[in-house]
Length: 349
Image (spheres, one colour):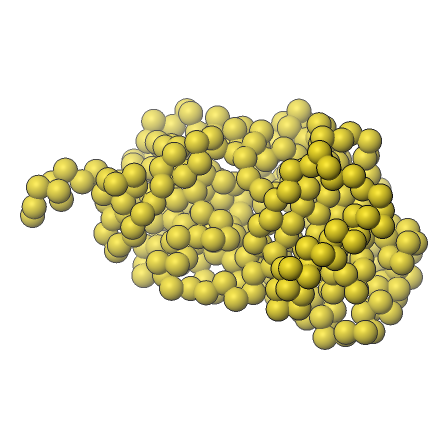
């Protein structure tokens, strides 16, 4: 054993990424005999390029305090061919939240655990079967969790492609006049996907998503600009952001001691773009598996089943081509039924 190995710091669990998945995994390991390190490449935990939408499932999973929820909705405004229709329920089922505040709140939950260490500004430069290199220093591990987003370094170490990743783009605009959660369908501009308006307390997220295999990133950008112009949305003071959404799930456990959670694992929905709930659940369940190697996660089974259902719906929309507007019009008709609306809400929220 050489001098470098003797000096190598060792942990039972190293979690790469302090997003919803990584922090929820760490929380599950809190108060145990395991020594846990959460490594975050950014200087601050929380901020992430994201529209900030949450579903009721996410709220229940986190038991969030009311002050973290910015807007809550029991109705989504849907727009197709400049005609409004609604997805609604008697109770709230979708919410918006500021991602920095969510991350800081999750981080605070870890302060009571002496066995958990969180390091920010910790960049990973190398991953091996026995250690990772963080800021030039070797860190040994028994279990490694990749919770580092759609462009995951841990996923790349495992040589897993992300062939089904969607691309999303948005403007964060310092505007508070928007009060409704709005979704816009336009088959010519966004194919099987959509544009959105998500209001927050001090800004609004206005964005769209698509798949590069159906619409090139360059064309999607042009289409997004055309859509913004059509609806007179001023983005001159907005901050432009683009980000991948990874719904290319392969597995969540590899080599016996390496795990992928959240977007790194490809858990996000390619249909709706939702990823926070999937991140929370997969992170928590991987924590349980680390603690009990015989544990079988029915919750992750349910995530995979839901993703498969979303993929089938998306596949139908993509394959429908020029008939896609007719499917959306049919959906508009069926959503008039309260029972069907409830089933749709249960599927997505």
